[in-house]
Amino acid sequence: MTRVGDIGEFGLIERIRARRSSQDEDLVVGIGDDCAVVRRGPVLEVLTTDCLVGGTHFEEGWLGMADIGWKALAVNVSDVAAVGGLPRHALVTLFLPEDFTVKQVDDLYSGMEECGEAMGVSVIGGDIVRTIGPFAISLTLSGVCERDQLVLRSGARQGDIIVVTGALGKASVGMRLLHEGWSSGDASAEECVKTFRRPIPRLNEARTIVQTLLPSSMIDISDGLLSDLWHIMDASGVGAELDADCIPVGGCVMDYFEGDREEALSQAMAGGEDYELLFTINSRHEEQLAEVGRGLGVDLTPIGKITVKGTGVKLASEGGERELGRAGFDHFGPAAK
Image (cartoon, rainbow, N blue to C red; front, side, top):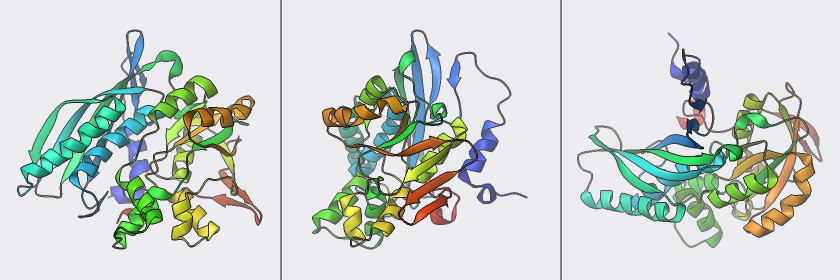
């Protein structure tokens, strides 16, 4: 009998998606993008859900309860941002062991409320259940999107420029530092740990990017640059070519690897939880990137181009060109066990 571990997280998603026998006439986008999208009169409603589970997404002592509350909401906001939407209302389900304290719950909600104030989101309900397993929190987020500003994974076309916001690899290095028993004191390492603990969704940046650069596709980098680029490629039916020298690597990532660019680049491409934006634009908009980035106060870095279907991902560097696989996080892959 086939087990979920045999087909992996994304194989399982494809299997579930294939089961749909009918489609609501108001459904614009179902399984397989950052958000589901439904027509609601003159606007679109966007819906997403994500969860954090102790022992899977973090170990004991890695995050305070307020950090977990912030992160649980932030990762969902990032999904809404990635389709060009504005988040509005959240439902929260808590899976609590019996020895969980009231103060822990208070701290958890303080973190969610802090993030909600920053992102324009209200927590409006949810559910609480007892569990004999580890603590977990699941959050469902709804939002709105103008019909002409919806951006999906499926619009990338040959010749489009591939762009990322910010610098990559910081959150995954932060997780490595926590796993290694990191303690505060090193400002560079602390930047990586903070990025892992309290990601800041590119919500305002996404809105501006959609309105000024007209991206053909977009996704947030949660599973890793390569893995999420493959999601765009699969949805759009294209290939990609990346320039190794152009991929922005976080300074604290370079510090962690003692200046070894190759090791740091590998981490930046495969590590997850950056929650930066990965998007594609028509080449005619490339000259606007620097200006738009300056206005936002964030780097918008072109890292490659979209190529024809069937070519996979190729990485060009001084040493030549090589093909890259689907590196990134899979809940049923080896890295998750």
